[in-house]
Image (cartoon, rainbow, N blue to C red; front, side, top):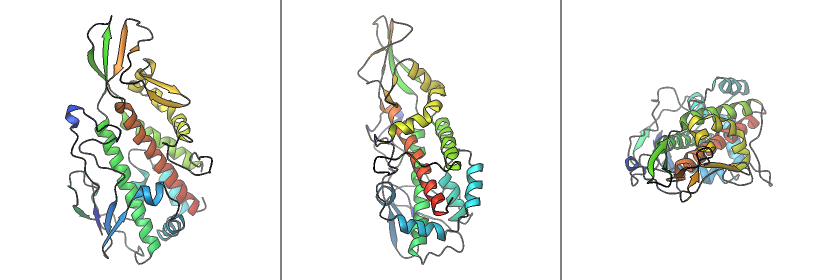
Amino acid sequence: MSFRNLTIVAATDYNNQTREGGKGIVAGSKIPHSNIHFDLGSGDVSYNIDDMWTNSRAGKVTLEKGIHNLRIKKHELRNLLVAWNGSRSIFDVLAEEYVLDGTNPANWRRPGMGDGDNIQIQLADGLALNSQYTRRAVLHLLSMSAGIFWRERTISLLSGNVRYKEKVNNGQPADKTVAVNWASVTAQVRGVVRDKLRRHQDPPKNDDHLDVPPSNPAVGPSYDAAIAEILEQEAGFRWLFEKGLIKKAHGQYDPASAATWVRDPALQTTKRQLVSTDDVIQPLNHIRFIMYMEWRGVREIQKVLND
């Protein structure tokens, strides 16, 4: 089987700390919303997580039948969740256990490869690839693994220090930064997901009883509430919060506008201003979406297994 990498982003110079505003992507990352291309031996097949899963329930039955064909056992899934330490995606674990044959390199998604390059990956013996259901499940698990991987890669590239300006007594502003350990936040958020899955809890739902992404205002505050303690215990994030550069309103976190000077709560002569709200918004949005993908994705598998 061959796997073709996602589209790489090359236009944005991260070394100069410029961001491609509003898109959450930087040079060296890849666009997780793109089609992912596979060849299972019968020609090119594309899979788009957004179209096939995030924003659609049309293929739900096909995917459920495919999950059955992967021969996942409920007790095995329970054990995998117990062992999951959050250092990588649970979909990496599932792909290795039920789709890949164990000989593939850990970097099969290949950060260094260019656009359109194919990677040969070996699938596990016994997969009934003549079944449309099995093929759907294979593409889904590998696409989830790859999509989450590139979101994490993007978080790491966005995880330069949060930039702000500071001035005292209305003097000349000085450029400063504060570090936020987004990788640690991601791992701890996965601990929240693991615990909820072990308790068989569903992700937040909207008024139509659909588990929609956290960008939807009907569920966004619930995701923020689930990770609030983690964020407010992270030293850099807590400092931004305490200094008023990040505020919490209606359960959601909002950075202060980059055009606004915020007075220090304790030192009234000191004011600060974020250089770009994207320094906070984009990593946090990717983390929340990873939380959604892993929570909803594994909960669906549990339900297929009647667990």
